[in-house]
Length: 543
Image (tube, rainbow, N blue to C red; front, side, top):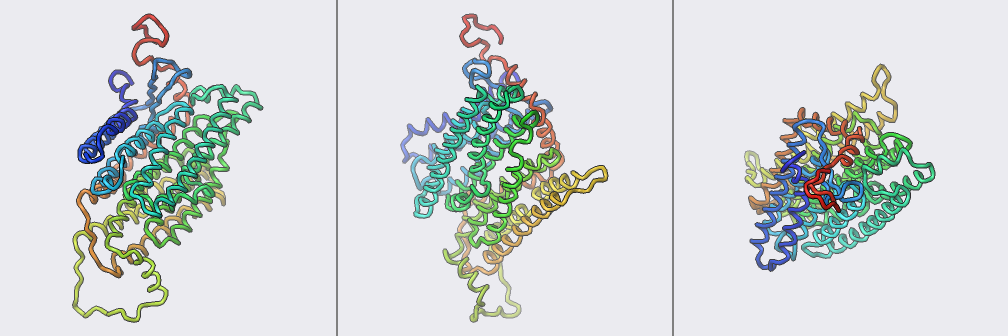
């Protein structure tokens, strides 16, 4: 990457961060101006992310390093862009636009500094996807967490405050583990640059490498907490279901940040060499346990918010399990599943609030009671009498059905294509006449059963919500609230139509990640951004 496109690498961090700082100088009563600035910054960030994604889609190899302060790696701060980070930036930008537009209906005005915290969250997530060293990963991780604390508590309410305090306590513990892990890695390897670390690991003495692996293990726990791996996930369904709808929709990307870091470090640091396969058993068995726990939670959930929260765990468990299998052929389908499930869950969180506006607070509990004991006063409809569904309920019902199809992995949408790709690759592990092992078949059955569980739960919830509603009221839904949900679901439809090119992109991404030399050479051979060496008196001298 050269010229102007090279400077685009820092834009996904710089644009929302600068906009967040500027909004601090505006009075909270000027909500319209703040909303316009925030929306403009978010849209511009998404446009930049799309431009970077298009550059990555143009051909391979695709690597770009941006040196801040004109210091060459590993001495200075470096941002690294490749196909995986470009994909995650675009996914974050899309979710950011949808969540922010949804919030403009009312949520952005129920508390102070919403737009500032939202933009800081966007900057922190984008920075975590772009950073090339572990220390700045910690910095962006903390920026993201600090903003998420305020966003989760946004709107007050006793349940939200209680869940928010639990969320803060758990993530503060994760941040402490992060710092301990980074310290152990630096003490043993002498560097925090991911590229430099990947080059040094094969030459490390066994005792120092053991200390480095211990630090990587502690660091991994911090991100497994964020990803929601069992038994570190008990906080997640409650916290996500208690958050406001646009915040919960944006939080769908946070668990995928944990998955991203684990994938990045696993492929870069432990893909081959003496530490090859480090932590794969933990990811495999932890992913299986998470998937089982999430599936049980989905089946047991009566409230839609809890169902969506456990769906996050099902998604994380599936991805962690696939990472633990360590089969490169499975990973392209897993990346497509990551994108599809994130878009679906983000749309589902926002859809839930719209659907529940037409229900009494105790409607779900009463519906369960009626299922268990019956309703003696139920009136049979007169023959020939029809029921007309209002347009609002028709749109909501269609979106709900689409979410059910996507979460359960039924054809023809992208959830089915992603799961079919993963299952086909798992069956294909027994190539050349050797059938898959019993363990592989057990994992296939578990993935299929999790989809059946999601279908059962979503069908049950849909019947109660749209067919057997006790109150029968039509929710008041604004266009600005419905459009983001339709937008995210339309993107899953686009993934379905363009499944071929999408899978090609995912496959090339995995093959690039499987060759750490590309990443290492990109960082080491990065040129000085401004054309001047740090500490050099001769301007214009190339690096």
